[in-house]
Length: 194
Image 1 (cartoon, helix red, strand yellow):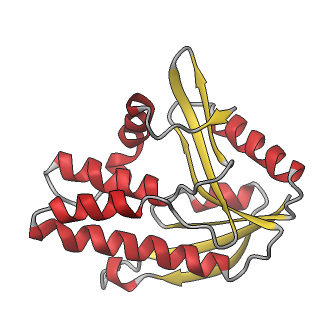
Image 2 (cartoon, one colour):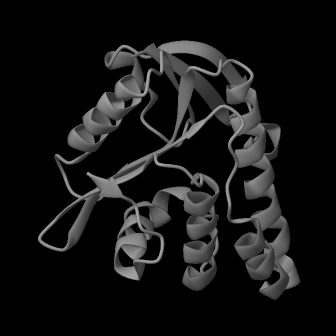
């Protein structure tokens, strides 16, 4: 396992390619959709030793990004520069995403103690590589003395995957700005002993 390198455009684009259809707003502007997803990825990173990647033959296979209690993204200047360059019609979507991610991070941090860790982002770009990066990250967390791992997710992800792997649901909520009258946008915070 290596530290995920945000300056490696090939690897960053591999993550964006994997999730752009799932995580981007409903617009035909693919350049904005990709920027929106890149902002999500960067907001889930912290300036620490827990930004992992697995690669094989020069191809990114998976990443796992994590943070300690109270750590925040170092990408604020990058975000502001991108926001300032956006047309007015995209600024609201960009801001709502940032507010949502920050709110969910803060809700998750409220459950954590100083000896807990938060899994911020976990993406497999190649089939079968999610489990090895997650297991490697968990081994690292244990070696550093962390007791519990926390994460948050929402109805856009496979929530049952976490339940089937022993994660305990500690909070379920609804995020109104992303909800419709027909379908509430559900959020989930999970915990697992390390």
